[in-house]
Amino acid sequence: MSLTFSTSSEIQVHVQQSVATKSWSFTNAYAGVLGLAERVKQLQATTPDISIKKIATGEYRSDKGVAEFSYRVQLPDLRGQDLTHSTWLTDSYGYLMLADLLPQSSEGVLTDLELSMPADWEAYSTNRSLGNNRFSLSEPENAIFFVGKGLKGERKTIAGMELGIVSAGQWSFANEKVMDVAAKVFKEYLEITGFRLSKALVMIAPAPYPTASNWRAETRDGSIVLVLNPTANVKNWLGQLGVIFTHEMLHFWVPNSLSLKGSYDWFFEGFTLYQALCTALKLKLINFREYLDTLARVYDSYLSYQDSWSLMEASERRWTNTFPTVYDKGMLVAFLYDLSVRSESGGSTTLAARYRQLFALRGTEGADANEVIIKLLNTSTRASALTREYVESTTPLQLEQLLSPYGLSLDATGKTSRLTVMKDLTGNQKKLLRSLGYRD
Image (cartoon, rainbow, N blue to C red; front, top):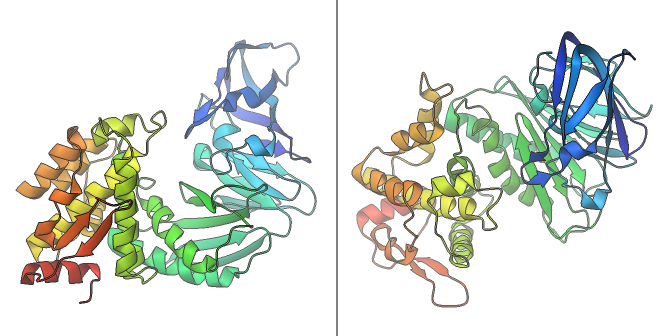
C-alpha cells in the first residue's frame, strides 16, 4: 500500500492486497467530523476490465474480486478542517490519519505502508519503520503519521517504554524540556495503572490558521495529535503542556489499552478529566486553589444547561448533544466519588486506585464497559448510590448540598461559583483534604 502526495490538496492512494475483495466502505464520520468519505474520488481497479461502482457515499461494489486498486483523497480547504480528528496538510507539515484515508477492514489485510512525499519531508509514527519511508502497520485504522520538513524529534526510554516528542514550527520551548514534563506524567500513569505500553508519541504542530482556542488535542492508540495556536498569549507553554499531558496521556491507557465495548465516555472522558486534575495537583503543575477553582468553573458550565440524561445516556449521545454533559457531569461525579472513597478510608484510598484494579481484571476482553466499570466502582454503599443516581439515572447534580461532609463549601449564588475549605474541620476531613494536597 502506498500514499503519495506533493501538494496539500490531494493524496493518491494505491492498495495491493493479498486477498481480493468486492466491496469497500469508507468512514464518513469520526468524532463529530462529517463528510469524510466524500473526499474519496475515482476508486478504480488496476485491472482495466473490472468496474467498481459507487452505490452510496463511501460505499463501493464490484462484480469481480479486486486485489489491487487506487483512488484519490481530496483534502478540503484548511479553514474547514478539523485539525485533530482528520487528515490535513500544509506546504510544510501535516497529519495523515489512516482511519479516514483507507477503506474500513475488509477481506484484505493491509500491513505495509510506503509514503511517497516531497524529498525534504520525513515521517514520524509509533508504527515500526522498515526504512525509506516504509512502515509495518499492526492496526491501520489507528495509525497516524506526522509528516513534514524540518521536524524536530526527541525520544526517551522510560521504564522500558519508548516515549517520543516531535514538533513542527518555531516555539519558545525546546523539545528536551517538553520531554522532561511529559516523562513525569508518563511515569505517574504507569504507576497508577501498573500497565506497560510498548511506545507512545506526542506530535506537536502549529495551527495553520488563527484559532479561537489555544490548543486542541486527540489521543488515538499510542499517538497524541496536539495542535497549538502559535499566536496564543501563553506565558508558560511548558506548564500548559504539562496540564494537557495529564489528560491526553491517560488516554494511552484509558480507553486505548482496554478491550471493553460500549459507550462509556462518561468514564474515559469525564473521570479522566478529574484524574488528570488530581495528577496535575500531585505533580505541582497546579496548586490546591487552582484545583478548587477548576471544579467550580466546571460546575458553572454544568449549571448553564439542562441536565436531563443519565451519564450513560449522555455517552451514547456525545457527538450529537450540543452540551458537554459527559465532560462536566462526568468530572463532577468523579470528584464526588474520589471524596467518598477518601472519606471512607481516611485518605488512604482514592479514585486512582480503581485504575490499577481495572487493569488487573481478567476475562474482560470484549465485555460491556459500563457493567465492568460500575461493578468496580461500587465498592461501598455510598459509592453504589453515586453511580446509581448520577451514572445510571437522570438525577441532576446539586453540589451545594453534597460537599459539607467532606469539609468543602460551595457558593453558587454569585456570577461564578466559589469552592472553599470549611473552617473547623474534623480529623477525618483534614485527612481527606490533606490526601488531596490541601495544606492548612
